[in-house]
Image 1 (cartoon, rainbow, N blue to C red):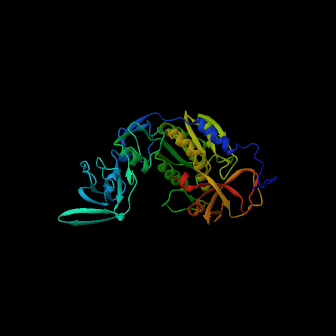
Image 2: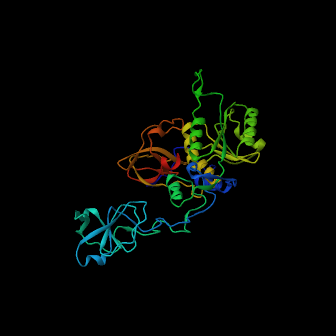
Image 3: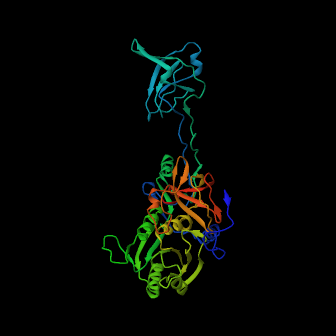
Length: 413
């Protein structure tokens, strides 16, 4: 990786670095402490409010890892043929193993008292004579072979997950495995979303000259629903200062947090900054990020506001990198920063810029390639991209350089 001394855009001395902005946002996030009890069948995506302890061992008894025969190793000394004294299907309680015999056993079945190994059926020869079943052991096991011991996975009293975990399917499976039927979770975060702009039209309506369809509202709804938030749809806000003030005030009365798109730049029709300052305060404005420089953060009547830019790709980037971690922390989630890893650049960028850039890239043969336009107004590139490639400020990219890659799977659901 090489660093250039000159930038192709305006100097960013007055712009807040992304890392500093994220740190400030997370410091401002406050967990909504209200909780509720929900059944685990309805807990997907919810955030645990309490540590979860197991009251049982998993598995509850020693059980077989294979279909085969349970036996006592010392019984093999006199010969390898053993009489089959019992059959143990899964879910039945076995009898103690008779001396000098084997028990037919199946995967997940409880090991009978006295057995110390299971021979998989592929290593045996079974037969029947004189109405008596027998088995020849073709490969002598060692003690403990193919036995999953009691508590191998989880011990009674063990914490199986901590408060702040955002429950996925695997979490719910673990909760079920220890017999937990309901959990205490934080109440869903209620987020008001609005889009500013007289040029915006809702999908399904005809476009007039100068108009565009409102994609940001639907992008934000999808992202918030993916986080498990309750969405308060405030619709399209007219491009007037008074209209913006009214919309923000109403949103602050209806939700825990407000997210707007558009109206945070410096144009004559951008009223969000002034409207926020008239009813609260603006604590952050203009970041060294591309796309998304005009992003703002502040409070309206005590409710946090995340003012995202109006360009569709900038909405996606700023939500992914900054708004999402803030919301997750407000929901009570402990781990809010997405996983990332280095990826080799399959392209070169000979000119550096002074802002940290988030390129929508595809992965081909393990290398990041730019598939289409990186314009902040082009959202379609996110459909074919696999994630963001992060280009630090004032950095020239040479093909073969390694840069941090953030998969969309980490930030878009």
